[in-house]
Image (cartoon, rainbow, N blue to C red):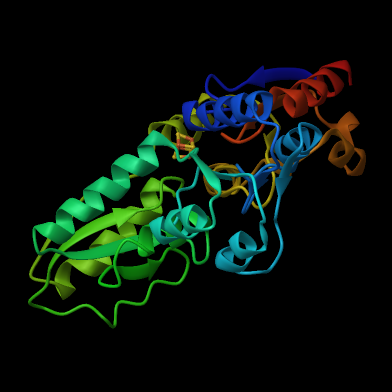
Length: 285
Ligand code: SF4
């Protein structure tokens, strides 16, 4: 198959930063190292860290329960951000902490704090229960959550001066529709538009598609930016076959012989170790 690779695909700066930090901690540390959730939403990346003795406590316990279960060692907080109360709890238990939060997420959190100080009513548009959403909502009980997939505007009031913030890995066009819904319901609104550059570039790269018959989006289903990439592709190219795949294995379920030209891209949390074997397989088909 003739393959066109997106201009912008795969690891973003935030993910690279988080992994460099985690690898450094793994090299320098003799004590146990833990993560309270996946460092980024990609299982291959998590498995690599496990090989380096970084234990990901990716189970259903609350984050507090996980911290309380750790006797000694270091906690690495993931790229998505976290409730700062968790840092305090970890320090109380004499654990070391390393913060791998993406600088863009930190900037967004600062911007929420500034809006709160300026007495704005802060609205946060995000995906329910996503770690980045949970971290942003933990900044203050005053922050009003707007579910990206199922927005409920019932808490808005006509005298509110709102400041609208959002998760970094959403879709621009869908956000705009939510802004339009909010506008007539409040007194004034400022829009921060916090989709990160990496997410925007990867979504824009889908415009590079010309005469390809099939699109492959490489990235785990739990990865917000990979799944949004898939959704944008589905919406933009309804006539094409589009697959979101997380590993080489997923190609086994696809009849590749029917395609001559394909387009490949990958979410910001997908490593080259997953992307390259898929590219090779597609090209050799
Ligand atoms: Fe940071 Fe965006 Fe990458 Fe998330 S996708 S880690 S916000 S640069």
